[in-house]
Length: 212
Length: 212
DNA sequence: AATATAAGTGAACACTTGTTGACTGAATTT
DNA sequence: AAATTCAGTCAACAAGTGTTCACTTATATT
Image 1 (tube, rainbow over the protein chains, first blue to last red):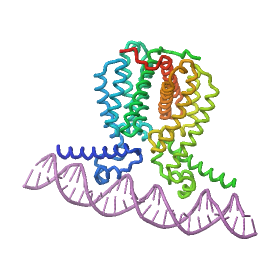
Image 2: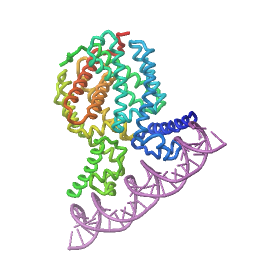
Image 3: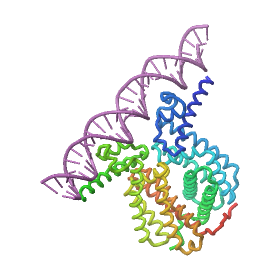
Image 4: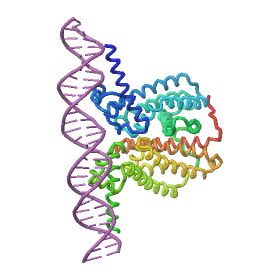
């Protein structure tokens, strides 16, 4: 029961690949037809049902696969990085490189985060929330932040993640080979993260702004 | 040439309304069919072509309409508000109320910002950029920020706008009548904006972080 | 070696889709 | 009052859709 199962996973993967490739060209997942996907995967439409009940199920599988892949990277990055400003600049850099190496996956996640069906959106939102909680845990280890309420740290972690996601959106709108503009985005992102951390360091529970 | 033109604009509007209502139920614009829209609008499919060349053109019209509507609000808010921490909390509150009063419009804009066709995305991105530049101009009037380079102020304005947009996304995922959760989102958003402004006040060109 | 399993095939189905062209009839212009 | 314009209708089309069923045939089980 090795050869047959292996071949099955192989065509299953080519269905996933076909779908994600089509999304990467700028189309939304909801606009893909089952027949199109099977055509690109080099398989007859009826074969689709040997792997997925319908397109929705394929979409969820796509989220699971890409997120699992992404989690690996994050986990690896968390263990190797040292804290401080260098960490910030360095990890944005490695992250952006990783994004470029996996454009279609991020394209899909970003597009369907708001644009997809309800279960798709939920699934992606849950993953993002997972990352955020991890990040909050990391931050809670630093001197200043360890003294703040859990909610406040999480609120800032959310802010950081949202900022990265926004930068991601800008990045993916560009063609792959614009190193200048990509550099500009990386710089802006790093600065934005700096502003947030700076604000976090000045933050105390119940803070109001000094101005006005 | 009054009555006829008036009736024409009327059915044109019912086409736009039908489309936006369908998007507000959770579907992506790309997945709407021309026939569905005309059906919901109470018109025969062929009539569609008296108003739009195709669905793409309707989509762009939808962006124009909703953004024009939004610009009015922003303009009104800009003139009436006074600076300071109260401004921050107050304007997020009025903004969130306005969002609730125009849910379908924001639903559409948010979904299609990343999920839509290329021209749709561009159009929305351009609008958002316009808001950001206005916001940067407002901020540049304050003591500390007036001494910063234009780019830095714009970078922070972008950060603020992105943060609001992210909160918007969370808000729209909820059913309309969850005042508790909506209050929580409003609080988090206000705090996040505070952190950013706080960071901005501590920011100087070429800042590195003190930590690490 | 005979049998059972199930991934992939091919043809057919009932539908929906976008687009067309000739039409009707009320609002407009002459 | 006659002629024109044109928003909306009706019918038809070719093309694409999701899903089904009986089928082949390589793999796995007995």
